[in-house]
Length: 118
Image 1 (cartoon, rainbow, N blue to C red):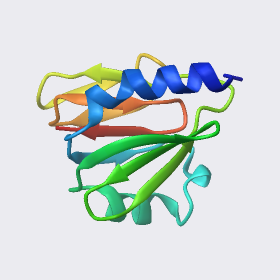
Image 2: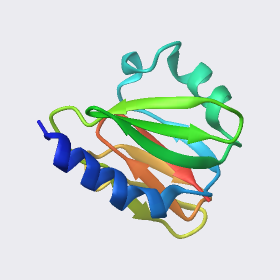
Image 3: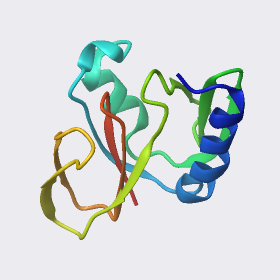
């Protein structure tokens, strides 16, 4: 499990990759981790833009343009992965084998979730 310095390093590394990006698609291979389920999570975030990324202890706080904050924990894995994807490509997340279909230019993945941004 990552300690505070590792969590801060993830935050600092991830921020320039996601700030100002708009969520275009969300999928998961572990739906029970999402409060309210996948449909509610998609409805809440798809179409909205990441405005910031803060940290509170070991939690990362993804801030969005409509006032919503997504709280995330790195869990045992300890990392996020940003994958650049050619438009309209069907593929598989190299990290955990999750199916991925998107028209966006990148995806942010963990083994628990998969999201695309543009």
